[in-house]
Image (cartoon, rainbow, N blue to C red; front, side, top):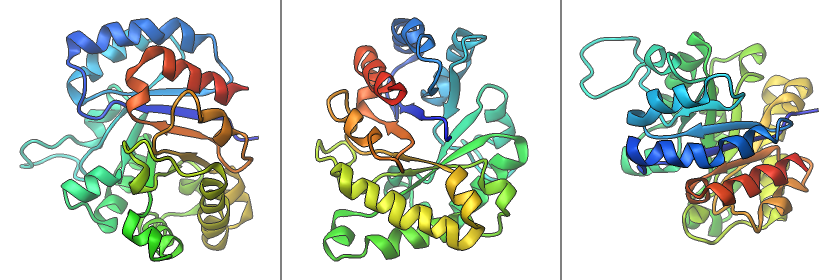
Length: 252
C-alpha cells in the first residue's frame, strides 16, 4: 500500500509574519490525520521559522526548488545541503519553473540527483500545456519529461521519488482535469513508463500525485482513483480549512 501524500506549494506567497499564523491555524488539524504524509512548502525565507513550528509534529517540510551544485559562485542559489538543513522534501521541475525560468529536463535531472545525494525526497513535476494537450501530445510530452528527468537513476533511487502530474493548463486556472483524465495519464502514461524503465515493482511503489486546481470540493474525486496517491496543492494550501479538507479526503 502506498501512503497518501498531500503537499501544499505556497509558491511566492506569505512573509514570515504571515506564514507562522497560517501554520498555527492548520497544525493541530493536520496532526489529527496521521494516515497521510503531510508536507508544507513555504518560500525559502519562511523555511527556518516554519521548521521550528513543525519540529516533532509529524508534519514534513519542503522547499520549492534548489540548485544542483553543492557550493560555489552561484549568486542567489540554494544548494541541496542548505535545503536539507530544514527540509525533507523539495519540489522540482514545476511548470512555472520551466515556463518562467527556462528550466530544462536535463537541468531538472541534475537537481533530482543532487537532492537524492543528500537524502531529500524530490517531488518531480511533469505535465503538458494546453496546446500540447489539444494536439494530442500528452503521452509524448509527459513520457519525455519523465524519461529525461529520471535519466541515469537506478530502481533504488526512483522508489524514493514522488511524481506529480500537473497539466499546465489546469494550474491556477480553476479548470481542473477530470478524475478520469488525470487517472488515465497517471496510470496509463506515468506508471506505465516507470514500469517500462524500472520494472513493475518500482512502478507500483512510486507515489504519483495530481496537481492543478485541486480544492476541498474536488479532492475526494481524485483520491477515489486507485492510481492517484495524493495531491500537490497550490492556491488551496494557503487556506487552512480548505487544505485540511483536502488532507482529510486523502485519509479517507
